[in-house]
Image (cartoon, rainbow over all chains, first blue to last red; front, side):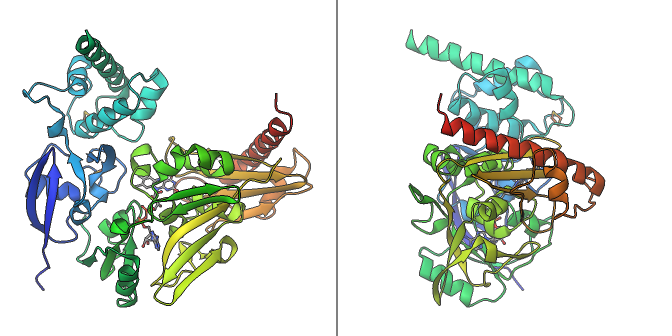
Amino acid sequence: MTEELHDVRLTVNGVAHDVQVPARRLLSDALRHDLALTGTHVGCEHGVCGACTVLVDGRPMRSCLMFAVSAVDAEITTVEGLTEPDGSLGPVQQAFAECHGLQCGFCTPGFLTTITAGLRENPRPTHDECRDMIAGNLCRCTGYQNIVKAVERAAAIQQAASVEERA
Amino acid sequence: MKPAPFDYRRPGSLPEALEALAGEPNAKVLAGGQSLVPLLSMRLAAPAMLVDINGLPGLADITVDASGVRIGALARHADVLASADVRRVQPLVSEALAHVAHATIRNRGTTVGSIVHADAAAEMPVVLSLVGGSVEVASVRGTRTIAADDLYVGPLETSLAHDEIATSAFFPALAPGAGVAFEEIARRHGDYALCGGGAVVDGDSVRVGYVSVADVPTVVDLSGVPLGELGEAALAHLEPADDIHATAAYRAQLVRVLTERVVRAAMAATSSKENPA
Ligand SMILES: Cc1cc2nc3c(=O)[nH]c(=O)nc-3n(C[C@H](O)[C@H](O)[C@H](O)COP(=O)(O)OP(=O)(O)OC[C@H]3O[C@@H](n4cnc5c(N)ncnc54)[C@H](O)[C@@H]3O)c2cc1C
Ligand code: FES
Ligand code: FES
């Protein structure tokens, strides 16, 4: 049996991509294999680890728990979409670099997308809110202390940037 | 692991979706996918067809009035949790939702999907039972209302026919003067509970619903039981089981502790309302 293919237009980081995929293609696999956007990582493939988290219409969601065919009406943002237009690191990426928020980097794309959306919703999180923001993401090697510091640092970078903008 | 192949339909109207379901006995509804996609990926389920309801209009509404809260099939857990109106009219819904998974899962998962998935380890099925709610279902034969008491027939099993779509769930408003609370113990916040309980205290009536204790959502009537004896009284109706997460003896201890704790919290919630400071 040859599997039916569906024509799907995926809008990722502001760019429309037309792909032909079987219905069972997970969004995570479509991003990585069909669009060659390998920044999104796949760990557990059942929703637990958070490595595959992308933003769907601005909200963090597990790309391993969505089908590409079901993402047709959505604006998707992956970790590749978090850099500044000039190619420099975005504030959350910058904070991870400064605070040693990653070691092997496997979990990092999921943290970066989750925190980017989290700080948009809550730009001045308390320490506890920083911890809560990342509670759905697993990291097996860096440890969470530096990741929590990176959330706090990212908030500070963004605040400084918005003060500068206003000045 | 990857899901097995399936036919995919993304209907633009409810009648179309119901036709598709009626035409394929081995079809399944795809809502948020936060329970179904893992089952497909692990190949614990391999339906011939998925009917994706995410494109259906009008199903994402959350309507709140004095009689209660109606939650449409496409309302995400996160939207229900964020609603101040829901919290005011039936606070048990909001209190329990805060324990459902992590924010990222709540952004996609639907509250109605959770209710009809009927997992005894999930919070919302037992909340529906505890407050005497119902679900509205539709099929090519028409619509009907199923009361929570008639909904849960076995582990992960409801009385919905294979071709019925749950279009909304209804949670009656909290009675004036009544109090509610929800407590649970999980290994990590956001994990499925090792044991959880919700309580409704209304005058002399005391009822507690349990999560992860029995294999179906279970509510126990503890009216008239003195404080301090609630846990033992509840255990007379429950048979906590061993599983990979906890032994039966540990679960029984959690039932003792949580029953007392959640009933006291619900009582405190009644008095704080009756004597506004
Ligand atoms: C990592 C992780 C942790 C989680 N932790 C928790 C937790 O602590 N507590 C908890 O309660 N849940 C938890 N969940 C599950 C989550 O709440 C799901 O959102 C919910 O169980 C199912 O809703 P859904 O919309 O995703 O349904 P789906 O996964 O799309 O569907 C689930 C089932 O219900 C059927 N169905 C769905 N909607 C309808 C409908 N409208 N009509 C008819 N049939 C329908 C589907 O056919 C399927 O059989 C967790 C999930 C993950 C991935
Ligand atoms: S790969 Fe998606 S949550 Fe782990
Ligand atoms: S940096 Fe290695 S898993 Fe997080």
